[in-house]
Length: 431
Image 1 (cartoon, rainbow, N blue to C red):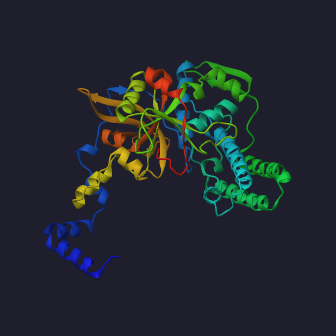
Image 2: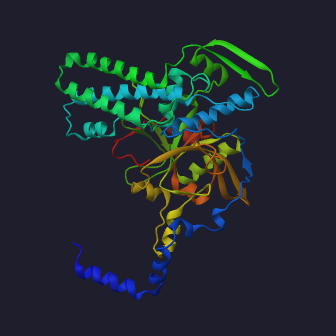
Image 3: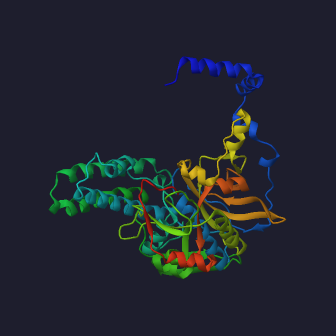
C-alpha cells in the first residue's frame, strides 16, 4: 500500500534536487517532443541503396496498412514490366473479400466454441465478441486472398467512402455478429449452418452496398510511357494477377520474427493459433531467428533491389518524417533510463499495436548503417511526401516482423521451414 510517509519522502527527495525545479519550470511550458529533437532527427534523404518507387498510396481512415504495403510492392512489378509512369492496384477489392472472409470465419469460430461448450464467460468467446470485426491483418492473409480471388487495378474497382473510412462498416458488421451469436445460443445444432448462411447473406448485402459488387470480368486499359495505348479484354481478377504479376506469394515468401524467452526459441518455426482470417487456410507461420540473421536478411533483399515488407510498433514516434526511438530520449529529459531492446519490448507486451510499411532503402557508410528509407501508405502530405526516414536504433527496437523471399534464406533456414511447427496459444503471442 502506498503510504503517506512514502509520498512525503518522495516530495523531500524531489525538492532537494535543484535540477527538478529547473526541469519542472521548463516542462510546464513546452512540449516534450520539442526537447528531444536535434541534428540526429534532421537526416538527409540520400541513401547508398535506394529502390526507386512511384509515389505514395493512401489507405485513408482505415486499418489496411497490411494490404497496402503488399500492394505497393506488387504495383511496382507492373510499372516496371509494362513501362508505365504510375499505376495502382485496388485496395478496395482486397478489402471487400477480406471483410466477407473475416465475417465468415468468425461465425464458424462461434459455432465451434458452442460445440466445445464455451459460453460468453469463456475467454475465447468474450474476446471474439468484444473485438468484433476489425481491419488489421497479416501478409499471409493478403497472400491467401490473392491466391483465392486475384487482383484488379484501382480504376476497375475504386475506393468508396466506406472502404476509405471503415469505422462505421466495422461497427455494423460487429453488431450483426453479436446478433448472430445470440440466435446461435438458442438454436439446435441441426440449424447452425442454416443460420450461418442467413447471416452471411446479410453480411454480403451490407458489404456490397458500401463497396459495390466486385467485377468477375474486366478490360485492362493502360498507356505506357511512350504514349502507346493498350487494352487486354475480358480478364478475370485471377487471370489479371497471373498474367501481369504472377508471383506465388504463398509459396515464395515467409514471415520472419526475432524473439526468444524461456518458451520461444530461435531457429524454430511457430504457428499462431486462430491467426488465419480465411476459412480452410492454415494459421500464420513465422520463422524465428536471431536478431543478427534477421537484419542480414533485410539487407540481402534490399541489395537485390527488392523492398522489404515489415511490421512495426506505432507506439514509437515520428518527428518531421523521421521514425525515431523517443523513449530513450524521454528518459534523458527525466534522468531516468527508459531504454529497452526489441526483445524486452516484445516480452513485456510493449508492442501493443502494429503498422505495416515497406523498406525501400538503407544508407551504409564504412559498413555501418546510419538510416533506412521507408515507404508508407498515409498519403503524400505527411513525412517527406509520404516517405519516411528511420534511424537504425528505431529499426532495431521497433521492427518485429518482416517478409522475406525464400531465395534469400540460408540452407539452414530453409531446413527449419520443413520442421514440425510449434503451435503458440493465441494469448501467448509475443510477435
